[in-house]
Length: 192
Image 1 (cartoon, rainbow, N blue to C red):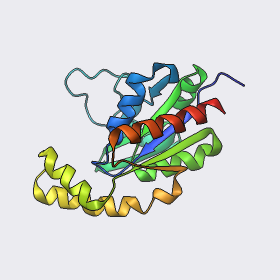
Image 2: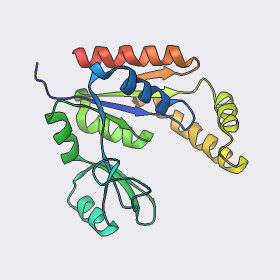
Image 3: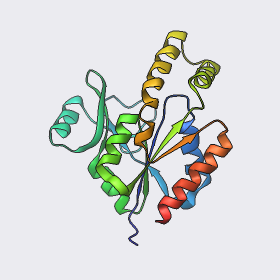
């Protein structure tokens, strides 16, 4: 058994509770030795963000050069010259240190990472109980305008079609149960 780290991928539609579940694993279970993959972005640092902590900050030109060199595991251009991505070298650095690297990514990124690493990665899709419940949660957050909520729900419908491509689907209708279920999946994967 080598002591190199493994990879755990989480994807989900917005509002399904993915970030809450990931935070629970990272805060409540230090024995899992989980660490977020530090992504790159071409946007400027915000507030107290430091290079190499929240993100690696690159210029759009630097980002494009790395894309051309095939240095990214996954990336997306959110809008023109605004990129986000995960460097292969960064994942290697973290797993070499024995960290189990957590990816909190969109469904396409999740599928790309899984395809790249195969059995070395565990992919978990956090699914809302229903689109209706998702609507209720997004409205309840009161952070988005109605048209933004409708856009997110339309996107969620599309994202749900990716669920079968993941190793496991955890339905988050009861947060505590979903956290326990996810914890068990991660523990079993790390014990392999």
